[in-house]
Structures are given as structure tokens and as C-alpha cells.
Image (cartoon, rainbow, N blue to C red):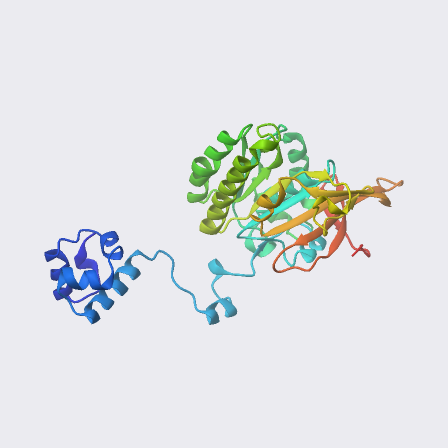
Amino acid sequence: MDWDQLDVNPRVIAAIKKANLRSIKEILNLSGADLQRLTKLSSVDIQYLLRAVSNAVRKNSVLTALQLFQDEDHSTSQHQKLSLGCSVLDSLLRGGIPLTGITEIAGESSAGKTQIGLQLSLSVQYPYKYGGLESGAVYICTEDIFPHKRLQQLIECQPQLRADVPHDVVQKIKFGNSIFVEHAADIETFHEYITKRINVLLARGMVRLIVVDSMAALFRCEFSAKDSVLKAKYLQTFGAKLHQLSSKFRTPVVCINQVTDTIGEGSGADHSSPRSAGKSVAPALGITWSNQLLMRLMVSRTPNLEQPTEDAPCGRPLRTMRVVFAPHLPQFACYYTVKLEGVKGVRMETPT
């Protein structure tokens, strides 16, 4: 580093050069007493030096509590969320998916998890004023092939789903050009994606959403019961990296997860997990993965409960989205249906 760029007295700069200190790292690794001994500077000069060095290496500006409360800076907004593309579901989540942290959507097969992931991949491309982030999404498939046909259906039906957005705004968005699909069949490939390839897309501003469909598939076959320690290590590593990407680029991370049946009250199941089709279920991957999450949503099919519609007189099966835990949300739930145009919430009394 060019020491002359530091905002300190030239006399201090001269002392640093004379002490043969060549980098900021060397200065920060030394105690105040050691710096005094090497540079022959006073304690006051050392304090000023350490303050100037800290300011030089700090990448992000500090915000006061008042600035966060007033929430005037769009880029640091604590209230900004990614819309799910439905006012009912957004109301349940108080605006949508948080921009930082990992959100899990767990549920049984055919509950609509992938449908929600696809809808988020489209919603992220809308302008900020309509709940989007004006960017693309990266969709990582770990088991099934990417549902291209269903995605095309959703794109064609966006004007019907997003009636709150002017038609000309929807028509201008090239939805299919901003969804980057990756396939990861094993944990090594997945690790390479989140440490290298996705980083490039995020750094270039091409994406502002990461969807992993699904996490459990990566660990289903590669680890036996005796490999629990190694499995936990991988889960912690993946969770830490996804958190780093989310925090650095203010990018929501949505991980889809399967559920497993639980037997009896003493099985260690999450007491807040819903019952699905009469069965008690819990998200896969255990407590290690749960500790990586900011928010967990459980989705499930609702037996013997349907919503009659014009195109389906016999009714469409209702599904339930429930908030299991989140630091900013109560444990509420709402019903929704999966239609041709996408996932839509239903305004009716829901179970508590």
C-alpha cells in the first residue's frame, strides 16, 4: 500500500517506513505497545494510525441506528423484500422473501414447492416498485430436469397473474433471458457452483436470486448414518457460503427441501411442523441445516378441501403455506392454489 494515501501526519508515515512496515496487515497484527516500540511514536500517534488504517480497509460504510430506523437509503433498506407475485402470500410474509439470509420452502411432493421457486424466478425480474429486484435468477436443479415447459407457461400467463403491473411493463421484460439454470448431481459440483460460477453472475449484477431445488437430494445417496459428522460439516459449509453470497450481494437464497415422516412424539420432530394428509412430518437434513436458516416455510396439500372455479367446477385442491419460524413473523398460515398462471393465495380463514 502507498502509505502517503493514509490520512495521518507525514511524521507518522516517515516512522512507518523507517520501521520497515510494508503492509496494513503487519500493522494490524501488532499490538499498540509493539508499534510504539518499532516506530518510536507516542501512544496518541499510534491510536490515530490504527484508526486511519481501519478506515482504509473498511469496505462498507457504517450506518447509525437512526439511519437504519429512518430507512432512507434504498440500497440498505431493511424493509425491502422480494415479492412472491401474489398479494395474499406477500401479506403472510409481510412483503415477501427477505433479501439477506436463507429461506427454506419445505413440503411433501406435489405441494407446489417448485412452482413457488419458478414464480420467484420471474418475480425477481420486475421493477422495484412492483416487488422485484430488476435482475435475474440462478436456478440450481439437483435431482429432476428443469421444468422448461412449465416455465414457458408461467411466462405466457404473467399478464393474468400480475394484474397489478401495467401490461406494457410486463411485455418489456424478457423473462426467459434472465434465468440461468445449473444442474448439480453431487456435492462437489454444487460446491463449485456456489463458490465460483454463481459468484461471477452476482458480481456482474446479472442475478439477484438463488434457488436450490433441492438441498436434500444432494445428501440422499452420498451419506450413510455413520457419516453424520461429515454430512453436518458439508451442510455448515454450504450454509456459510450461501449466507456470504446473500449478505455480500443482498440476494435472497431460497432452498427447497423435502420432508420425512415422524413417528411418535418422542421422535425429535419439530413441534411446530404441520401435519400433512394426516401424517406428522418434519423437514429433511435435521437440526444442522435448520440452524443455517433465516426463515422456514412449510407447504402441504390440504385433504378434502377444494376451491371451486370457473375452469374447474369440481374445485382445485387447496394447499397450505405455514410460517414455521422467522425472526420477523408470527406462526401464521394461508391457503393457496396452483393454477395455470401460477401460485395464488386464497383469502379465507386458515388453521392456526
